[in-house]
Length: 58
Image 1 (cartoon, one colour):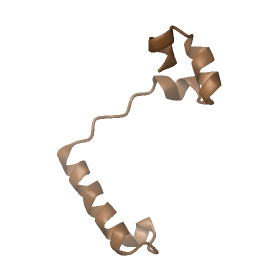
Image 2 (cartoon, one colour):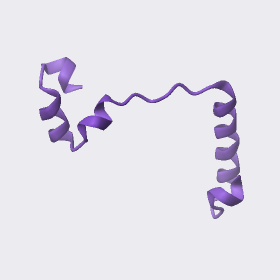
Image 3 (cartoon, rainbow, N blue to C red):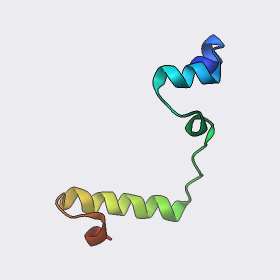
Image 4 (cartoon, rainbow, N blue to C red):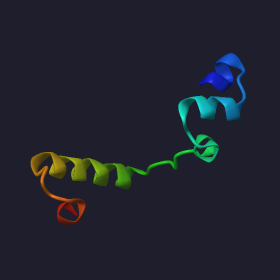
């Protein structure tokens, strides 16, 4: 990222890429084993049935 690599300010870097500063600071939560397995299963169902929405796939 430009902040670490070039020493640019956070405000300037976010303005250049068009991202909110609050989203820049927010970290993704750690995903547990069960959630990863569930997501993989849902992706497999979505691959077989692309016309289904998330409610039907669930």
